[in-house]
Amino acid sequence: MSTQLHPPRDEEKIPLKNSSNNVNAPIVTSKQRRAPRSRMDLVVLWLAVFLLAVLVVIGAIDSAPLRSLQGSAATNSNQTASTGQTMNMGSDQAKTGPASTAAVPAHQTYNPQIPPVLQGSTVDVKLTIKEQLVTIAQGVAYHAWTFNGTVPGPIIHVRQGQLIHTTITNDGSMGHSIDFHAAQTPWNVNYQEIPAGTSFTFTWRADYPGVFMYHCGTPTVIDHMANGMYGTIIVDPATSWTPAREYVLVQSEFYTAQNTDGTYSLDSTKVMNDQPDYVVFNGYANQYKDAPLTAKAGERIRLYILNAGPSQFSAFHVIGAILSNAYMDGNPANKTQGNQTVIVAPGGGMVVDLTIPAAGLYPFVTHSFADASKGAMGVIKVTP
Ligand code: CU
Ligand code: CU
Image (tube, rainbow, N blue to C red; front, side):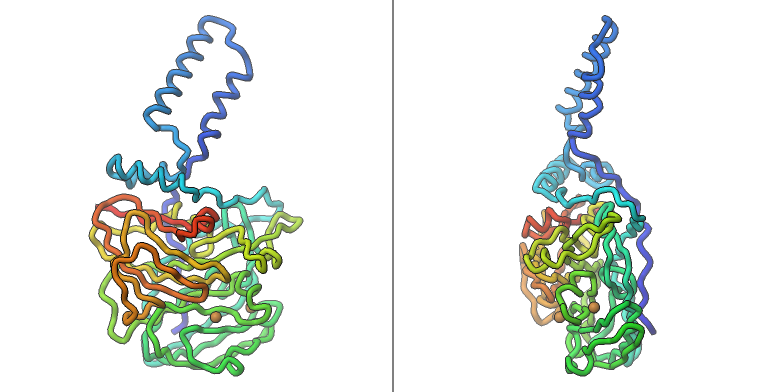
């Protein structure tokens, strides 16, 4: 059985409003274009001004992009207010790229759901390294190095005790490698460079349960990781978790320099200076603001969080909720209770459980707010 990319969710895209400046723009333009020349024009103008004033007073015109979600999700005025406040805390500053002369591939929402656990005492995991143009924010096409063509790579789901028969095929133009944090295996034997155009196979046993990183470890390692060569392997405990609505979130950074054709590639100076342009969940700035994770009120939600870095710590936090349990690195033995924010180190993982009692919108962020403002934000939409 091999690991497949699961198809992107067919999420309904909820359009986000522009800023209030844009909302106001047509009226200002209209006033500047010509002065009213007749009594009728004056009446129309004053009616328009009055209508605008009424709209502003009742809050129909608002600078918060998430307002557009309220019609479908927020169920009372308290939730409406909290949503607007959230957005004003600054999650809108993730840049959008200037017009590109090259084709920007359409973004498909990364499926955050966990694929079924692979069955059998020995399972096959196949990864193919590909150089691929991916979209990392609205209008921003980035020349990534990938596992299976996406950033992050596919979610691999196995069970504690299984033997993992791994085959890595390098379809790229240079040497790459693999490093499974869930494995205990000699680096100089199995994490060696895999030359372009070749494959490499080895077998290891998943001894510990958890949410683990896999990544390329070829020097310069930070560049290979910053270019997108990482993904999540979830090892279920031998005794399973309690049932829950489960999602996977991978936080990571992009450091970009624009090419002459408008696409982007890695900026190694920004990488070394720790100056990301984008910090994202599952490879795309603010993507779960557009396509929220969903849950029912009172339902246990379990988030498998991986921080692929390469350099920023994550301070994972859900606005309006408390994490009932958190398990460092996703091991059930590492249980803490009642957390507000959990630290997920670069190269580390965390499983958090939460049960949200009331319907509404619950943004999740890294509480390192400079990073949230660069795109590390999403929403859990809870329905009754
Ligand atoms: Cu690599
Ligand atoms: Cu590592």
